[in-house]
Image 1 (cartoon, rainbow, N blue to C red):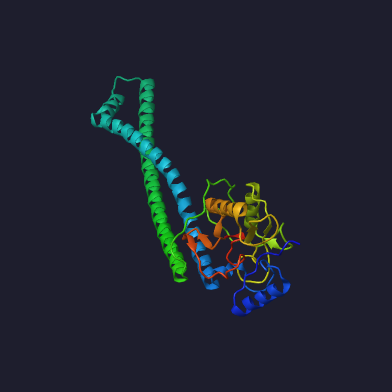
Image 2 (image 1 turned 45 degrees about the vertical axis):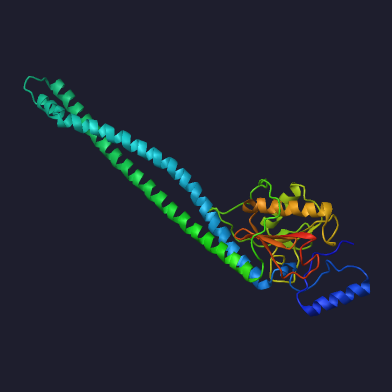
Length: 341
């Protein structure tokens, strides 16, 4: 029988009960169902709540910053075109103004009123003067429009630069908050012990400004009888497409974190169910899977990854955590936990 998704033990009483049950049953209790808070309790619930808020804000700021950089690149192209057009029109208008200053318009007008011109010649002259006047007026209007377009692009660039600077400040602020929360929980410094490959996942859909829109659990979970969000399903399918096809469970009720919201999956390091500490090929599988999620965090909308007594967030990267329960389930030494935004 395949064990149910992992459940955490969060109080000494529960720990004692599980130990007694284990002794009586004579078998490990690594993945028993429970209504207690989920395995994310390996990081204190209050810490998880802080991480969710700070990393959600970090991801939103990063999405806006990335979108702003893309817009700046396009504005730079438009700005260069407007600059070249402005220079071209300024040269043309300058030539016309120079000709007028030298008296060519006055001489032409004087010639038009000469008494020795025929009616046809006079009409032709008037038409020519009218055309040149319209041409000069069009040049001036085009020059004015080009100047406005150039000024518009300059203002757009200034606005985007300010937006990017603000989002960068927000990202730095949220990263500092996440690191402070982890440090206060006794999690130490950044630990980057998982190999990270090149991104390969197909990007999940984003909203029009490049951010992550909130999603509800509207999709049937292929791993359980519950429902998950489209983004969670996308991350699951992309991981499986990349070759990570061992046992996995996503939706489950019973706590206030991501699993009941359909925003999380537990990827076992073993082929069937959740067993003891992953070693050998199983450990290597978990390392590679955790690295895969980290590498594709931007593409999949990763909120955090927990694996082998480590937690990774977009803002704080890898940190140790010390509040796990000491067993393979709560220490996440038998499965990789993924939460998406």
